[in-house]
Image (cartoon, rainbow, N blue to C red):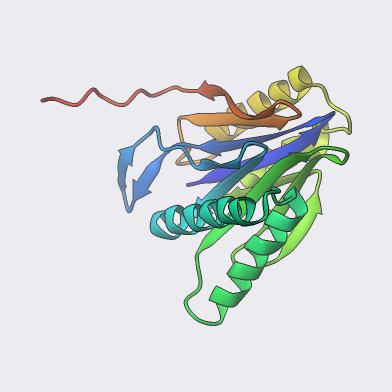
Length: 203
């Protein structure tokens, strides 16, 4: 029961994802980071089949880095979103990826932005987005409480409301979430919201 969501605030964007690695009725781990840093100022939160998610997000990350290496300038967030959408559209007619993406970034002179990209290569620039079963609750909470130019503190308070709602209302709710932020200072991990710790491995 995956959940990835994000929103744009005043001079920043935040992306949140559950951290459960699940197959069938088994939880393999509860600290899987599903938000990839594409570069210093871009975040990609993804949900979907674990293999597709890992392969496709790494593929996009390496191609963004390759573009920067070849041309000496990084892709803008809009360009990265359109590249991602193009690759999904190409794969859709060959061997489609079952992956949904929330892409956030910060561009100098433009500010923060958030893009919704689904598995059939739909691309939209939005203020808030969500995927997975948790989206039913997180979108409802964001529709009620989100407003433009939120401060970081207000956005994190809304994120916590979404997480509480998902945990209390979703029948098989993920216990742990990771929160990442991107702003003029770069993309970084902000916090974890954990209710379950993985057992230490036995040697």
